Length: 104
Image (cartoon, rainbow, N blue to C red):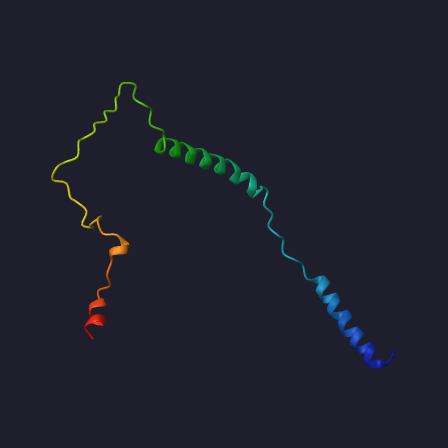
């Protein structure tokens, strides 16, 4: 081993020794699990949501005494009539520009 390698190795060994002397701060630990704390709240929120949905969307109860009356009215005399003349067929149709062809 040459002297340069030995110098570099000693340098890093001294750095490792200095690092071992430094104390690490304590890591805070939590004694409770967050998932277990949210479980009762999620159950309560679900029940509250279902209760509100039941109150809002409660089906209407049918009334026992009701009747439906359907009345038919005869056609009114003054009713509007179609503007299309049903007597004209496609065979009798004449082009509006036909007169231009015949005149010239």
